[in-house]
Length: 144
Image 1 (tube, one colour):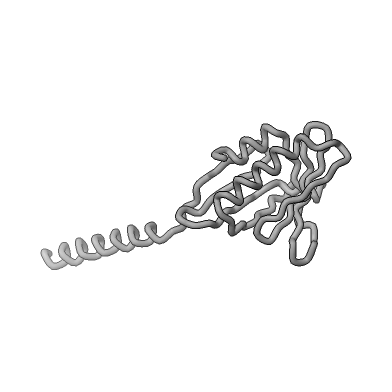
Image 2 (cartoon, helix red, strand yellow):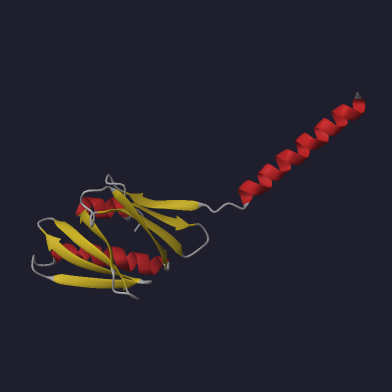
């Protein structure tokens, strides 16, 4: 009986250790900001990798969430925020663009919202369309 209890105790101890080891190796994402339409900006802890997920308005009949990985520094993300924030000062007919990692953000102002075309720099293919108000922008880039 003592041997069975010893073996049971050993198996339980060994199993709990392996579970602890497994959680230590998982990636941890920090939420930078989010807004009501489902857009989220995340940063991988201890890394320069950001994940930007947004509702893609390119397909108006579907609610598709598009996700981009940006291998960029904190200052690059801060510059993207400043670029988008300053784009609210554009004239209605003006267009502006900003390149970060392998993407280009082309901005058009319509009423009090920004229409942002996100394109691949390599193929010049349009990946998505994002629509942001100034409140949405500030919520999305919460810590910048």
